[in-house]
Image 1 (cartoon, rainbow, N blue to C red):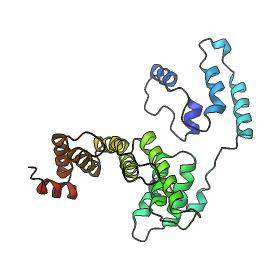
Image 2 (cartoon, rainbow, N blue to C red; image 1 turned 45 degrees about the vertical axis):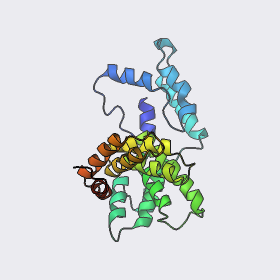
Image 3 (cartoon, helix red, strand yellow; image 1 turned 90 degrees about the vertical axis):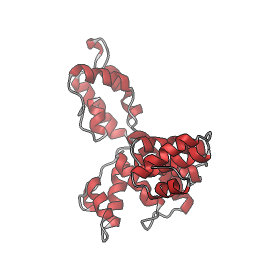
Image 4 (cartoon, helix red, strand yellow; image 1 turned 120 degrees about the horizontal axis):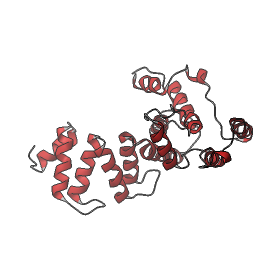
Length: 246
């Protein structure tokens, strides 16, 4: 598990405080979501074998890893110089600047997304969805499909409210994915529960009008009020229009 977390560019066991919790967490996780999973599953099973005599030695483990490194065609390294050594956080700040270098930000997001960074995946999807960069040579539909896929990965793996909202929107509109109002409501609800005011408004409308789910005006009003309390302008306007007291 230590090796996997390093491979996923994470600080190993950052949230754990004792060896027992590390052991229990490692056993419960199974195989991680990574292109490495098929290559290292045998290594994991051996390293955590209940009988110590069956566990590989460090030498055997490193020889196995060396073999994986030489044979694996999925390993990706990041050329930081291509985008000015920016981190993902710095690339987001660059994107938000009025005169920011979006080309470098895109390169940063693309590179970090390739090695599994969830936030970078979301922003790569954002750039594709809104067509913020010149190239790659893809059709609008192809970009929408790739953007939707990235939004879903960020929504599911990172529990990102922004990604949950955007993937819900794609499902609701049928952009890059088959239209599915019921599934859209699931992702809007996740985003709303994670504090996204626009998702709260969307859930309010969905419940109020029964869009893809059973109509529930009371539940709709609840979400509309929550969105309005969070200063979501459309929710405030709808509450006024429907005489929903705030």
